[in-house]
Length: 583
Ligand SMILES: Cc1cc2nc3c(=O)[nH]c(=O)nc-3n(C[C@H](O)[C@H](O)[C@H](O)COP(=O)(O)OP(=O)(O)OC[C@H]3O[C@@H](n4cnc5c(N)ncnc54)[C@H](O)[C@@H]3O)c2cc1C
Image 1 (cartoon, rainbow, N blue to C red):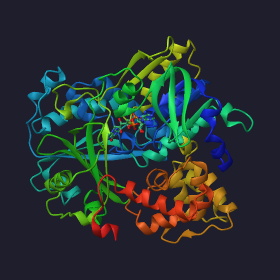
Image 2: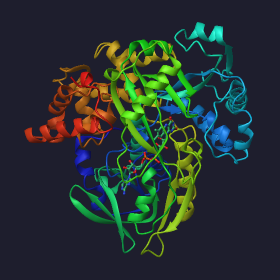
Image 3: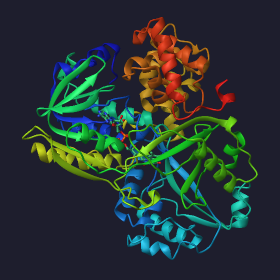
């Protein structure tokens, strides 16, 4: 099912037209969206509001890893690691269009350091900064990790390849540009999340489909979602929502506060201040750097920098992602990637690949966000628990409405944390769970061809209409929902390659604008496509895309100019790109 433009117009009033539901979810990050899908699957009447665009908070700032979190073993978080590995293995099957196996290599410069402090951390007595992790400690961690991964079928073989340790000579044969001081490398498998924003969009659209009522009245749907709609306060047991048209009150029996790092601020706005959260900021840069890309050998390099922080160099979408930091942050301030953080990233690249120069001209995109971590007292940010929990309160001014706040929750574990939240909601509503989300394919992951033969079969019907090569590119970009993109392209007589970015076509962009709740140009450039991520959101491309989708979105000349200006400001909000990249 795809939404039409007519649906989108109708959607603008869907919450106002019926201002009540059993459940109101505040926050359209991956955790709110996944809870929305789970509740829709149970037939619960659910509404979701997101004050900006979907997946524009912490969920847009991740390191793009679907991982068990090997380093959380060091903090003694065995439950979380076990759950995360299980979810990772499941996502490889339910979302194979975006979640793929990722070979990960840890370069190691010492043999024993870190071992003595590790058992203390397992017992949760350690709170200080790490000492460099040596080979022995990493080996212990990987043996435990392998045991959690057993039977996961990471490479479709039914078994996860075990980790491998190599000495200096073999390591340098495999990765010749590595720092020659390296003593060992440890290599294991995790998974990459190529397009987090698109995967979350798929989860959202699955929820909308599952809650859809027959007929044309969208306000009758049992699953309704609105972006650019904020929960601003509670009033007499109702939640006051605000969208572009103004404020209105909404009633629900259960409110799910899934506002990620803003959870305390949302509870404060609702009139019941909490101090659950202690998020830390993390930034990333994206480099257009073919030499560095080649040096990674297609693997993620995951390692400990000199300050004990775990960092990564990661080939993604033809670029190199470098991250991340872990800094205290005040949620009332925007998260930006600072010049000091960039110096830190360059330093860490130099630590691993000392012969490969990097400079600011190669940065094509930067982004920063705040991890929704629980408050952590004086524990160092890198050692704060990554596990999640659910807290319940009464909605101020209401005798019966409950607020359930999610504290924490990673991308990797979104299905599991949503299942826990859904169970708590069902308990409040005294309703049974009717279906599990375990193993349920997500969006364009349904029927996704994973073998060469299946891929050829899937593409064959499109040979005459748009050609195999283009169909293959769209399958890669959208999973099996490429079928509806292709149908829209074929039906549009004005389709043409985008003048400034021929990799995209005009009918494709119009289709996304019409069917994926696009409100602003930056939604399209930053979250419905990876145009911004790969550094292609130049002023010319932004203006071109705005022209192409203007009719679908009802923009006149002044709206086109305003949207272009806004989008460029958003694309560069986490820090401007290097001057040469902008030009
Ligand atoms: C630097 C960094 C690296 C990370 N790397 C990884 C990784 O590699 N793998 C992994 O598994 N996880 C990773 N994570 C963690 C993961 O990204 C987050 O834990 C997860 O995305 C949180 O999702 P969420 O839905 O809870 O929060 P968010 O995505 O922040 O969503 C909350 C939403 O609530 C909205 N909101 C707030 N207040 C209101 C209101 N009053 N009304 C309406 N809406 C409101 C916000 O706009 C926001 O969109 C990383 C996080 C960061 C910051």
